[in-house]
Image 1 (cartoon, rainbow, N blue to C red):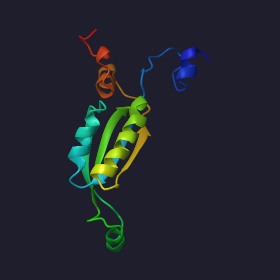
Image 2: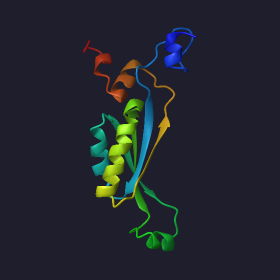
Image 3: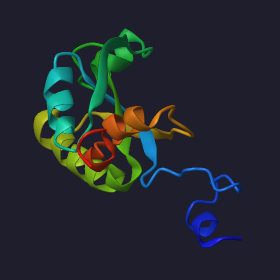
Length: 135
């Protein structure tokens, strides 16, 4: 096994290009109306691509009321971020959930196995040195 394959076990054996930083899809669920705030906050972690949608929870009205929530409407933010920044993002989000969102919020990641194109990857990972013309 080559040194590159030890560092990146899913690397192609034939010497194909491997991205220096893996990407993940960060899914953040917050109260409706707080999506823009959290999306702007996530930009500070170089999240160049974000999509914010409105979602509806599946909890029944009596449970929502019991938990002290206003309603079951939520903002769901999908962000593409570098894997090496996930720990700091989770720590920062936990702090924001407690101070801004009254202790409510959910965040989790889904690994991305590949991205087509060097420029697409450079944009998503905020790798300026890979973008054409900046070399």
